[in-house]
Length: 261
Image 1 (cartoon, rainbow, N blue to C red):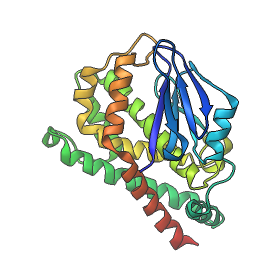
Image 2 (image 1 turned 30 degrees about the horizontal axis):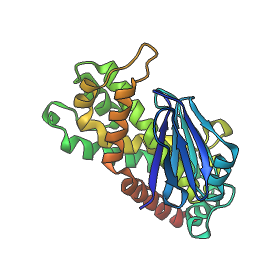
Image 3 (image 1 turned 90 degrees about the vertical axis):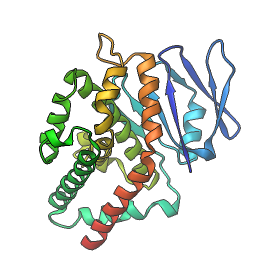
Image 4 (image 1 turned 120 degrees about the horizontal axis):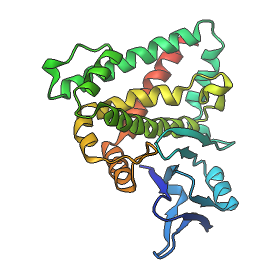
């Protein structure tokens, strides 16, 4: 399975260099770390103190590895997309392009995303220890109820938003690796913002753990988690293993689109 590489320069700046077929990560006072590009599915950059050499970025693109950028609060900012994608990853991109030309595509896609979020909310409710006190999900109603049940709803919402940003980055990376272009990734270009919508769906798996996570993390005055909290949330995110859920979600999307074209 391809690995994800998270780069966080909050404690000390990180320089990303190229060393043969690997990224070389350099931090002052610690030994360099090497990340072989053939093993990487995506690189996620958190904050602004990660310094890239141009040849290292170019090597990521040549290897088909998208680079994701997140704010310190966890919001997904955007993705650096490879121009060429291996042929076996283009099936979904072709289906989306063809389906987008069929009238009513946006409406069908919205219906699909709503149904998937409802499915994810039901799954979250079944694992929630206080389920008997919560309403049956409409997702927005259930989300408000879960947040309200937390000791600090504002902090719990910030945790959920942070994890949803990581999930959106994961989806964006997988869409990019399959050749899906920017018009379906970026809302500013009039696209569908598939990554953000699907990231919100995947983030429902954290709903049952939200009260516990919110008690453990600490946020600074700027609304961003501190370095210990970031490590905790990144560990929780990676431990959840959302790659399989993301692949299943994209597979169901491909099945829907195949029926349209």
